[in-house]
Length: 369
Image (cartoon, rainbow, N blue to C red; front, side, top):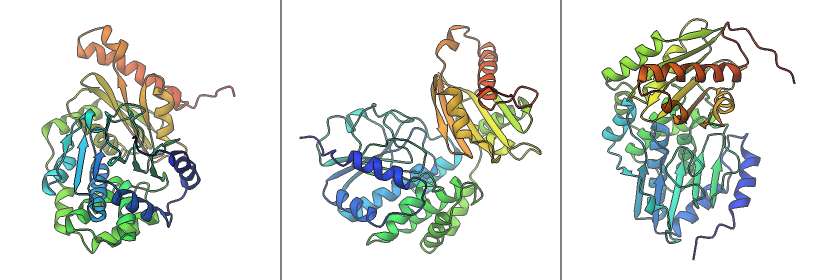
């Protein structure tokens, strides 16, 4: 007998009502606690190439599940953990991870729960087949019509780790130093040390976690060693930058360092006169991109979604976003990476400028309504 999905629609309606609010509804912790306590196994699926917010949130949800009585708990992911801070978080805090296996989520017994943290939709930035039944979703990204037995989707919150901290605070438990350290580091990283997308909830969560965390470990995680490949990727982004008004767009060519793209986008945002940065490159058989903005007139999540929704998966928040585009027809033109990147550069840049309503000179383009 499949799990009861009768609450899915109700969860969606509730999510839409609270999507603009940062507060944790009073009945949510108890609902999550009861759902976990009445089942036997929890598999937490991270999004592909998980970042600290996703990894720490998975660790936090696993801790809640353990306190609720679930003995079998697994955290799995697709893609790679390549960013130096992500690797440091996993290694220093000894987070046990498993490669995603499709059989884990397919044809499972009803007592085996599957949860998403920091993402919401099967098949979008994860390896879970579209249409798969999900039991728990906790996420702060803007997504419509989230379907699960338990849904907490609050776009206004600055980090998913903040949301997991709220659950821990509301339930009969306390975080270990390891979990508190992971959650505190994730909140700091997701908000760029409380400078990006931060809300009162992040400060309250950080104050609570500080009492349980290990400050030395947080500092260690904040300054890991950087690989030469990451430095090279950032250097390529600097060298290839194109500026149109306050917008900077750059490509890095082919790279194995997918997580260097957001680092490059963050770094280039420090350039005088620049308020929006978008960096992209070839990673295996895809085009990966990362966007950042401090311009109140620009929602980069909307920009990349509008630019690439018909050819890939892209979106995010007002101040930070990302996307994946399959090479598709591009790969048929040439096998030479330099020539291929030249074609990709022209098409991607043109789509971005069009979505931003500006021309290459940086002037705004007037469009008929």
